Image 1: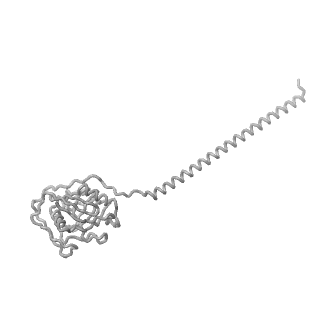
Image 2 (image 1 turned 90 degrees about the horizontal axis):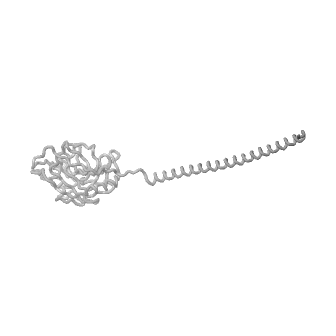
Image 3 (image 1 turned 180 degrees about the vertical axis):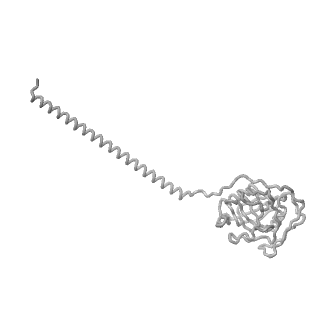
Length: 290
């Protein structure tokens, strides 16, 4: 049997071993804890670096894309043609057109009045507008507006349109190109006032709808005020009232020319309606009639 001294020594050695084990365990825990903390720090640092670099890249790309590629402003043009309207009741054939000389006698280009007697109201006339932007073939329809066709052909044969430019382009709402002002110079505040020195009767009817491919006469708000100015619709024109005489259609080849003019944009848009002289000038160099 162990003596008291022996028991105390044995207990002391046991206590020492326990303390050593505890110290070793604490040391191991500190080492493990330090490792975990180190790994956590590295992970957090990596995440922070990734977030910063990712956000920085997005901001740079966004700024670059916004400056290098602004939102598209390309003109949206429908491809579907609008069918030519038809009169519910055909006009008498032949018919009479009341062309009236301008009372002021002022005309940028002197021309003879068209013959208003025995004007045919059936058949078509092929016309090609030769321009600096390309050829624009048209088909004039006498059944729709015999007086407008008679006037247009007369002016073309007198070389009235030669050297004139299209002065008004619309790319939103009313997508059309207006031409026929002999005094147009590209100044939106002055253009649109000139004519041939005479007026013609209105030939509009309720069934008229405007849209891609339609050729129509321009006029003022006053009745029977049309002259030499006309407009070619290459796109939408839904809100336009049926007040303007439709007298023909534009060929596919001509619409391609108008599309290119429209996509080039407007040089100095009018703040009131957004229309103005086309950036790509359309100047007539000649008109052929067949």
